[in-house]
Image (cartoon, rainbow, N blue to C red; front, side):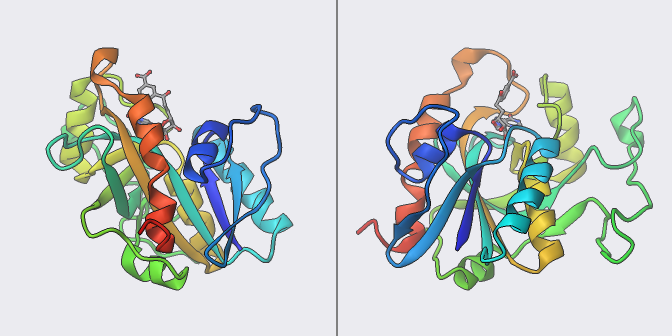
Length: 231
Ligand SMILES: O=C(O)c1cccc(C(=O)CC[C@H]2O[C@@H](n3cnc4c(=O)[nH]cnc43)[C@H](O)[C@@H]2O)c1
């Protein structure tokens, strides 16, 4: 069983191509090309996602992988324009560490999150999406952009913050749940894959530059490609 982890019910419905349901309805497992997926809204932000995935993985020991689908912001609108699909090859949690008012002085915290989990730097999980997809019996689309994704508790609210995060971490996308889900999978030694569609440029608050509907609709195309059901 693959845990299909999305922040919201709406993202789960689009990702699993399910009919619209009320936000409190429990989603049922779906079977696609012989693979079982359990769609679960894990909540918005790293704390809700960490709590939810911990509880879900304890309740469902049959889960062999976590597939995180959802919308995201783009740091590079040329490589990752609105509605495009991006695969994370690293998850970085930039807020873990020491914060300075000047981004140039930003430094990484020296302490590991878990004593027995050596990460270098300690806020970065390197992912291998091609291998992880294969471990879950799936294949990536060759045209999907691949790059690091930054998980934040607070969405970047202006172009300066976006620029400093881009300069410091070299991210392709920004999201609010991925690091928590990737960390849970790493701790349990199960597969993890994060694929998101771009809803907005990171740091832009002018809603004329956003297209959440396009990104939500684009989520519908991911699972058919991953499972070979799109032909
Ligand atoms: O109020 C804002 O400025 C704002 C900007 C972007 C997104 C939001 C949201 O409320 C959606 C957060 C939700 O969607 C993912 N997401 C989408 N875009 C971004 C982003 O630019 N930075 C971080 N997360 C983003 C995220 O995973 C959440 O689940 C509000």
